[in-house]
Image 1 (cartoon, rainbow, N blue to C red):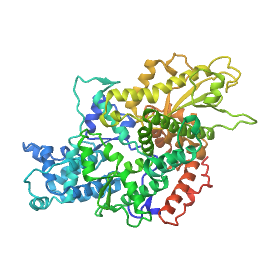
Image 2: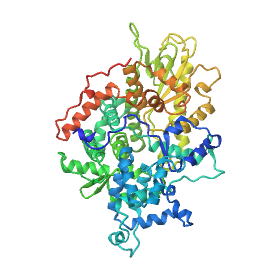
Image 3: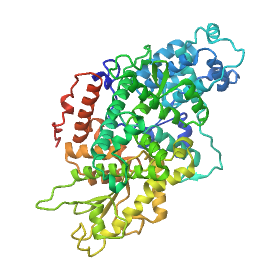
Image 4: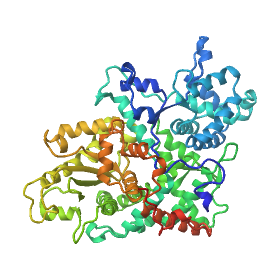
Length: 637
């Protein structure tokens, strides 16, 4: 059982909270369009979180210098003739796994260089190391590998073309691994976003660059499997069982709705997903990346087949769906079904997508089922129920982070408390009275529009900013106005008017927060004259957008270091280098990656969940001491 999460061989996973940042094909072009090159200016965020990946344009300089034209499309067609698509897909699955882990990518780097002639190897080495132009590059990146998978699947072999075995004899040096890496780099060379001198701007940036950064941020915003697993079970099992079915007019408990939508218990989904994830997680270069879907798993075949019906595609099924996805960020067919089935063998096309589908993605299984049963009213009821689950979770976290109050009463208050004092007003979901300031929290569980994620659509993105931030800022603004009123009504949770307000929006869904999107959010707030933009003298701190993971990080710092939530947010907002980045970036760079083991409730939930998975997979594994539900983290001063 332990190898499902942390394999015996291979590198250990990176920290649970790391922000992967953005990967672009041309860093100098991106920097120039950010306006960093002309002035020579830079930023900690850009230097730390925007990286460049390798393309053939970086190292095919010898033929170009000799006056020969290098056409990526022609080279791709030639490579696709050499090997069968199932061979390429196995190689690309292994390469995509390595793209997640620098230690594995280094192994492929050495293998790649050893296959090239001296001149070409020298070009590649200089590009990778940054000695060519001062910009180091990553050998592999998820986006071009996944797009290369699409290229392989949607390629139609010309009528009368020689077989792959005959073609490969003509190019004996181009074995599947070398051909696969070249295919990735050729694909990467075609992924640059189009731009024009006269294109519209979003904030201070050209629209094409702004939307590329948004789509890139969404694609690279994944969290680690243990965090997603523990948080998901907490939401569905603990808070899902607390919701009022009659009030929300929901037809069953969330776990029952999931079983109805998928035909599976949550434990089966978790166990099978982690079994297949564990296999690819342990993969090393040179090993076969495919895993038999049934061998060694003590779950009946019918259950596994039911699981595969929701999580896997055949090559033909995936080809049809990917044919309709020509855009650089159109990953939905793989995101929804990250397993490729070839007979009884599975390829985990993308391990991050597999974990996300089995955790965050469970929301969509129920969403689609409820819409199928009752149209818009059905999925609206489910959306409201899921929002209620997340709100309950956030309220509990805020309660735990509330300072103790001597005697009776509490410094924590809820929307119900505010409604009693300010009937008929828009009230925030929760708040904490810290004396010198009042923290107000509003929870948002909306999802980023598909057009934003996959098509980098500016209109959809603008609506997302409104849904995620502007609407919630309006509620926070109205509550702030009420709590600043002098005198306070008798039922107010405050004895006297608030001195200062700290407005916080907690996101239950993904939205990339970086200097690009922060500028758009601040511009929208300023234009609407909300919160600290309502007047020059408004005693309101800047708006703080945080997500569930960041709130968990703050809870960990409170448990281990005694740091308060408003202090952490205000330090972030005062940071010269990271104020316009995410709270996650600030916390990691300030306190270090090792400062966030997990808050106590997630450790306890992870221990319970892993024990259930172990039992489902026929193992007698028990949680290690650091996941013991009763163990509290040591306080570090």
